[in-house]
Length: 124
Image 1 (cartoon, rainbow, N blue to C red):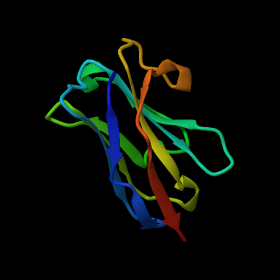
Image 2 (cartoon, helix red, strand yellow):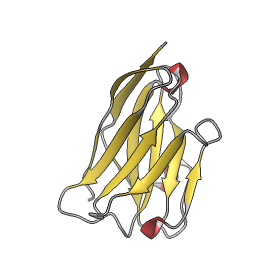
Image 3 (cartoon, rainbow, N blue to C red):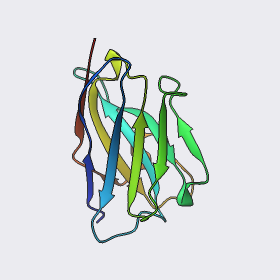
Image 4 (cartoon, helix red, strand yellow):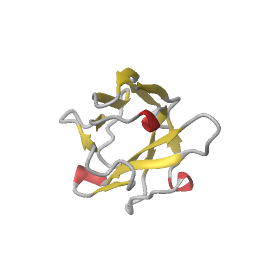
């Protein structure tokens, strides 16, 4: 098991920024592919961003490209999602996910471990 805990969600105004964190207590995330997904009310969970082992490769959904940045912390047990230029349509519950697969996935089924989610609400 990989216990993932997200934090950093909250309320932001359109155009503002938030930084989400995903941490695994007592475990390094360095050798896991990591992803962020989100689920808005009444919609299916969707891919947001992913990062490979060691952080060498990153992937983004078109809707967030150029605004969001996924990165790994120096402590190797934390992954971040920096969200800039937030839009109302970014409002959702954001989930962190991890998997030991070498190839980074963009599908829900590509990830074995999931956090409980953190709410992000963007107001106009």
